[in-house]
Length: 217
Image (cartoon, rainbow, N blue to C red):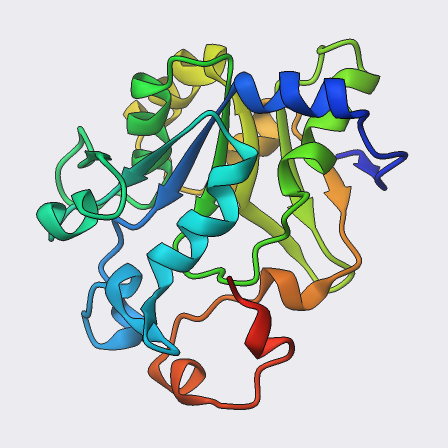
């Protein structure tokens, strides 16, 4: 799997064009096992829910935002008007939320992020979409990585990948990284490791000593 560091910033014209062809998808449909079954996206950090923080980081980078949720749909709807539960029953993991997102995506590209990354980079879309510009749009899937690890749930996908994903799920497969490998996804290296920190436990939410904690929104 190829890894590309960001080469250059997109011009203002390219950035505007990029935003218009992007739908953002926030994954908030999990069971919240690490939080004792609580709905993770609705847990608060500094008095603001995680999903709201992610929404406000992602919204300026996309033409519209979709939220994938399987419970508390009314509460999520108050944050983002487009809220969709998985079309598959039984909490099938992030791939099921992505499948639903691709079905409702009316733009060429879907920018996928989890609901528990409140430090999400404000240049995330421009950095990931640059790979598609450099490859003459031959690359249809790109995901973020840091020096420490891959972040497959933070990925940019072309909507034409929907049949491939549905078939993968129909075969009983559930691992996102395996599917990304199957569609020859490329990765982009980000230096800001803190920007990809997942707040997926109650202890992390309670910790007052987060880096850049005053600049979440």
